[in-house]
Length: 101
Image (cartoon, rainbow, N blue to C red; front, side, top):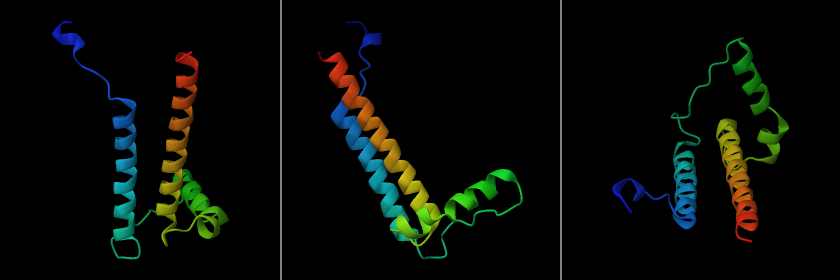
């Protein structure tokens, strides 16, 4: 094995510890910032993208159903992060089932 082959990718356990650690760090930051004056101020201009995000944030999904935080932007980021983690978990499970046969 030469020096260029020594670089290894993270093992699945270390990779998932990293993913979950980042998720928990973001959640701790959200808990500390939620309800304070440090919440980000989203620009509500008349352009398409901010208006679309405002409509998504004002939907009942982030205002009534998913409400661990008082600030809807934090609820949306948490939901997207959880969905991304679930997609990665499903992809890894499927790849292990297919390639470990």
